[in-house]
Length: 552
Image 1 (tube, rainbow, N blue to C red):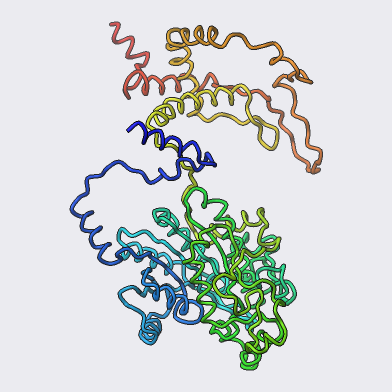
Image 2 (image 1 turned 60 degrees about the vertical axis):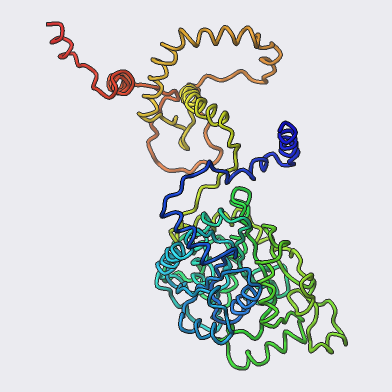
């Protein structure tokens, strides 16, 4: 027994990153006594899903999503939920492609409506029972480059941005908390080379993906505001901006949640699928010649079947559990050109180009726009306001040690009291230089601290503690107290004026720079409140009239 404990201790202390030391214990829970209803739900979950992973994918009735589902079901290791706009079409495709209906479930989700996204998430939670979501693949997309004007969603937002980005953003916020229960959860977002302007495809073809300062989002992004940057509508740019938003969000969620939840967030570019329903709104001549151009000129062409294998790989391959990555295939787009490429029907090895196989995957570089941290924060905040998304709080893993919990509970109140005293002695200042005033509740806490801690305990337990502290710690060395280059200025001294002044004719009312912890007018009320809560178990403090009647 002792040997096993020593080995366990050795494993824990040898974990390289101390922040992850207790991560493996995050889901530890004491034994639970299950109710009959819980036992029934667990049995039904096992019957429905078995040991298969649960995958949710949007937009799988055609193109890339359809091929990805084919590959997922072929492994017999996944139960797939297809979130689609047209359920009848999806049922026909599933029958045509021979999908195993036991492992494939169709659910309606109209990404043009936030209410539909909420409804889908609610129904998904009921359908999955006790099974956590293992994969969320944000694949659905629309491309409307020929439109001279914007089309609007049910919620009054430009359709391309809502379908491609905003509704997926909302869906992730609804499902992320459940995904933390899965052993290897992944959120995969389908990006695009057009959203990454450090490439020829993204930076050399007008219009360029550019959110500028997100003025359109900051203004609410409601009809008639059709673009994230607040300027005029261009269909192709709306698509490219939406893909830029997805890639930025993937990076931001990786930074905010990966370490605390274990969820892997990544984006991918599977290659230019030149023959796909995504281009159904392009003119006939474009649909005919664009695949030829991509095959023989740029080398960026990839067939829809191979693209489906690539998206499947990011959901399935253990190597792709790495978070914060933009996955691509096959190196540079000009690589491997020549007679050999022509003999392969134009399948040139390149960035997104066909060929290369399973091991051609690599971590691609992202543009400065994608990696713009400050703008990513603004994007997250504004998209949250537009969609009404509610995100879980990011919490770090802590030790489940009972001693730590007891010490934390004891010290929490003490720390709060000490902070209040510090804030009263040296208050912060508002932008106009006036001191920040304590709320009535905080003032009451300070009085309670004076009465109970300093008055009662300070003369008993506190006195013993101070004596013990002096004996154990000794005096503070003089060298520790000296060395300041300036004398501390009195708090009453006027705060220096800002360097830049805006000349506006206003009357400036001078306020003292000290803080009146408790005014005389409030003191009686506050003392009464403290008496009620601390000394009288909720009973009101006796008034002067009550006291006189008691004496009579």
